[in-house]
Length: 309
Image (tube, rainbow, N blue to C red; front, side):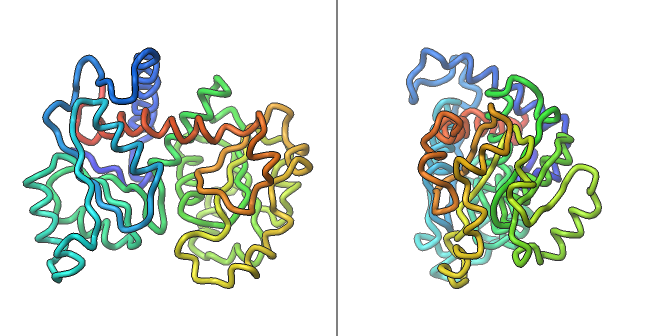
């Protein structure tokens, strides 16, 4: 049994095995429909329990299809349906019940400590479907998409992030160290004040660079990542924040400083951080990026339960 909570907790060789397996599984599904099951049914009889404390579209759909294609089943829970939220039941007791009924637990949470507490008491694998500090399934899938399009290891590419310092970026930074790729971060100086994050950047200064000028950040980029500037639970003056990120908006002019074959990725949902012309351009690979979540998450499920080929 192996948990999948943060990218920096997982050996690089295991992350690479997941990506390799996902590539094989995607190739084998070229002529199959979404609900057609994989021939060998590796998770037949297994159940994935999902719990969402935050809104979800892509994570919910992709994990649903992932377990179905592997021959298993899924049950989706909302916290307001459980005694954990309404009746004061402890995480310890909830975790023990989940362990008795399910085989894998996926949690999308608004609290990192909750993930750690579930990990302490649960006796089945737990997958982080998103937390305030991390989004590991998203970033591993994004690496899969980058390598699929560019047809080379991500370690040979220049990766750029334009936007706020958030959970998705935290996982991208962790991945840059695991897979040894250069990462430029473009973010307004006033939003670079996360001391823990800056300490991490300084410690790994040979590979990770941070700029308060988006043009300098994207020069020579093979891939540009972005995310919504104002997140779901962002307790800030939204108009003021959007104004601070105005010159970091990704438009055709900013893209022109990157390589001609540079691609644009966005974990979605989108906001005003990207111009419509870029988002709907040939350089944008956001729809493939979202679809690839299914393939990579299938391999993550197999990894956690010890059935990765």
